[in-house]
Length: 285
Image 1 (cartoon, rainbow, N blue to C red):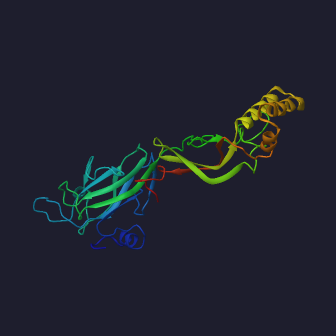
Image 2: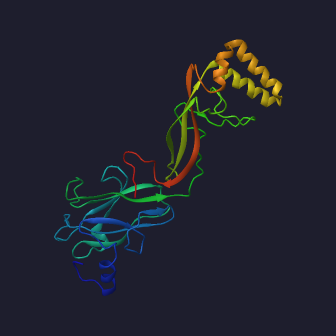
């Protein structure tokens, strides 16, 4: 280091990844100098680092600065600061084990900022460590919706017959009527814990017609009522009576004509993660 310290501390700072770089600030567990990025709401947060510039402090001409902890993306010099002169800086500006947050903590992502000149004006001499650390609470009870936003219908509506893709021409999600699309995902963020849940879905688009929708509704009503094949046969005859045998025959095998397309989705999995959903300004480690 740039100043004399006891041998054991010198060894710790020189040979661990957490020893301070010039003009820097890092978060750590209190009593340690190893960088840590995640803390729980009941853990104190400490920092270590090094500053190079000087704040006006009377006749004393030593490195100094004001240290701020701010929510990620907030104004650089907001909130209460710690005057680094008061924490026992080394001769060359090193500091360590400085507590900056006391439990209980508020979940969120935080930046560390040092006003090197103590003038309240952020410039190139000052230090801002974006996404310095994260605070999380207990994992929440987040759940995935049956379908994502965007007008999707469930591939499996959970009806008594077990049939799929209701309203599509052909049985279930018939390959002649349906085209598989790319997987999509949604994300639900819980700020009270600083966790998010990413839900993934398979999607498809299928050809539909009023005749197919009426036929499916009729079949589903038969299943709900516990009726036999005679009820289903009545549905077939009704289709033929309303739309003709040729159209009903084509629809039975998933062919057109169609009057619309229906989008379907089915959940394929979910992942719980720390921090907010990915996007502009989000912190990732």
